Length: 215
Length: 215
DNA sequence: GTCAATCATCTTGTATACAATAACTACCTT
DNA sequence: AAGGTAGTTATTGTATACAAGATGATTGAC
Image (cartoon, rainbow over all chains, first blue to last red; front, side, top):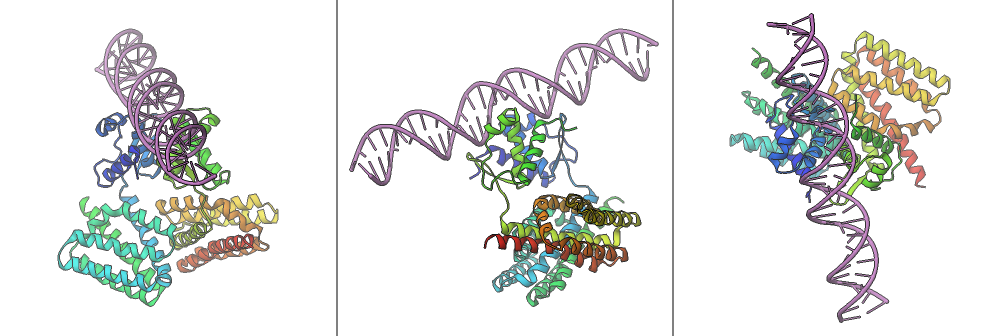
């Protein structure tokens, strides 16, 4: 499908940026990258263009492109936006999800629970994402869904941090139960509120961690 | 500032796509565009990459770049998302806007009113956008603000259609008053609801128009 | 010794050349 | 005549060559 070398490189670079392999402000040297990927500068430049357009890097004319890792402030803003978007998805999903969707959601939730009992954090992480993705889809608005998915992946690396907090997993599961209940009952406002808090608390935890690191 | 020819071309193409100068599915011929802009294919290709990444065009490897105008369904989804995002901005802005922000908002509203009295639709259109932008900024979340601004510009061409409906302008001004009032009172939920309906009605009007065209 | 100016070098931006694949056409087979 | 196949053309993807601006160093003046 994707035989364009440039697109593959863009994907790879994106992964590298997400996993924090690049420092904030670091310049992406076209020649070095070309050498690393064993291609000429042309596909590298096309890949960099993608990063710039999607906001992961900044381009200064005649100077180069510099990767832009979100700072604490921007991260908090992204978490807040995520919380609000999830709330919107929840509100819409409450009246739009099919019975089949609700079954899928319930099953995803069970797998989350199972992962916790197995103390398999990676698995929990994966199933938790699925749980939320089912809600995005349940909102029956593919444009909104795409926005939600995009932000979810942007925050993936940072969301993981909350797992370090003691008791967070069980609290999270309680919240999931509430979310599931609200959606089943079709209570739009309740679903929105519970989801907003569920996601917002991740931002809080993240904030606490940042604060503790600066001490 | 922007001495990159490629960026200028990207901006120009973006404008052309927004103003509907391209048909949906139309292929963007690199050679023709290169000729039109009096440059080589290289900057054209970089510009096309930008369009593709921002979702305004689709790239099929080895086939070319095809512009993608949103269809009725996608447009309705975008209007709904816009309504929800505006609602979120309103809810946050209600407790975060400064007195100065509220003064600016009030002034923008007055200029909207003035434009209507002058039956200057273009002017109304401009001031109306300003009105909403002040609310985005009032939410004090620059990430969210950016998302809102992006969607606002994507929908600009279609939002204009509502102006055709008789009495819509006066109704719109009434809604503006309610929005302003809610924000001044710091009533977050009220502001969210009023804003959501205010924007959603544009989607409705748009829907009506589409339906009437298909008869 | 410090600051500024000029020159060399490095890097990006654009043009052109080449490679590879898809679209099209014409011819051949049945 | 219809369908398929080979060959031709056109278009995209990548490499390289060239142009222009930015960085950095060296030299000279004070």
